[in-house]
Length: 312
Image 1: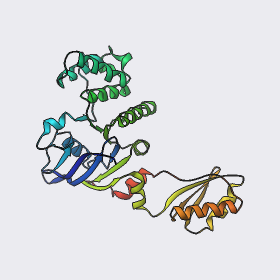
Image 2: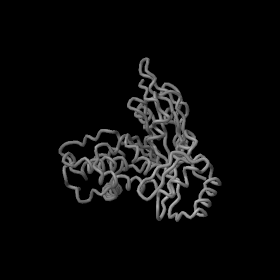
Image 3: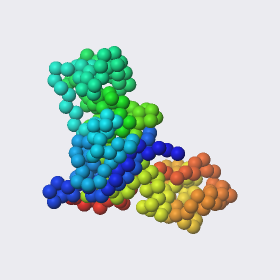
Image 4: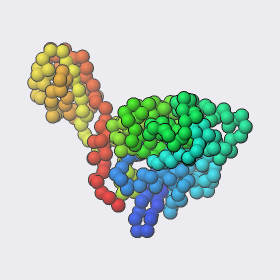
């Protein structure tokens, strides 16, 4: 059974008459990656800042490994790595000097500090940039340095606010790989992003927030099933794809059939047993099927279904 790492309990935070976070509760499990999505101004950054002990809620609490962000913020801070959406390296410091500065700030000393700085730099692929000025890095390498700084004190929870913003495709792919390694090592990651397709490929679960309220949370597939009563399916065949199309349009619980190259995509309202029966009928009907699969949940569809585009 997966262990819970963080429990967020009825968080509320207002700025004047604006309720930025409105009774938000959720649980994050250890070693999982969670996407945190919502329109601009939905309350994502405020929630993240509270979890990182950089802001204080008006009410509610968050408990990380048994520690309250309100009662023991210093101890919580030792277990949280917060990567803000802006990276502003200090001038006149190279990459290793920049990491060494923050390692000292985290209380690392002597040989331990040197080893940690080198280990984190190596993990983030910064070895060949060790003596490069921190202010002279590309956007992608700057984000790697930003992540490396966040990892120095070995936090159990990583909170990343728009870490892939402005990165080119290769840098985003490489950054995703780093996150998967960290997750495999047991770290929990909460990541906000507007690049929904990327989150679909990276995250184990997702939290959707709008106007400060949590609209949906859980595994992407579970949320998708809760907001629609159909599954998107794909059947790839050998031979005439039009034959497969003609077969499907007359089948029960099949809707919106369309041909895409050598495949037929359709919406299916049945359960797994009904899908198995549909596949059996297709084979008995002479279709040479090489692929019959439910397509991955569409995070963009979840976002558009669970939010209404309302601004605070």
